[in-house]
Length: 193
Figure 1 (cartoon, rainbow, N blue to C red):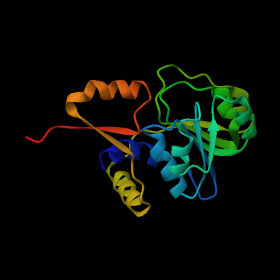
Figure 2 (figure 1 turned 30 degrees about the vertical axis):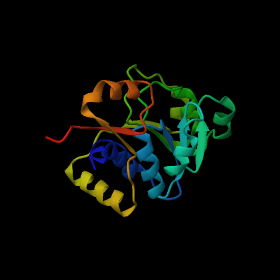
Figure 3 (figure 1 turned 90 degrees about the vertical axis):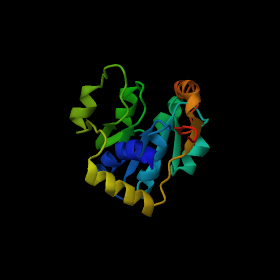
């Protein structure tokens, strides 16, 4: 349950607040947060789009609940989903092409940040104003929402994919995370005493 108490709460809170059955929801970043977000979005009844740079995570994204996979490095794939999503949940800790993603939102759509990019974000103002799109953020949940998330996860069989590594290999674990090779949460295990 450990990964759900951090990543699960982080993505559950904004999805619960904003997603209704039948909505089209995009998840940027199929990593420690994103793989859980895909499962929650599907369980909330959304049509789920996974966005990742490359195709190496497509099969996993669909296994986690994505109906559609969009390679964010492919401009043609982006053009195919323009003005189509109600919600985009950005779980990636890196900057994205803000204009391209804002253009993917339908009028009234919401771009929600839970991944924290290291740089300031720059967004186009006109599509936000003219099409009433919005940008918001969320952070981990409180006790009540955490309990609700755990119950929801149990009912819907939402399970984080965990890679266990010995505590003595913590440096190697950090390197795997930095190289984007963790699948999808790493849990360090101390030896029995």
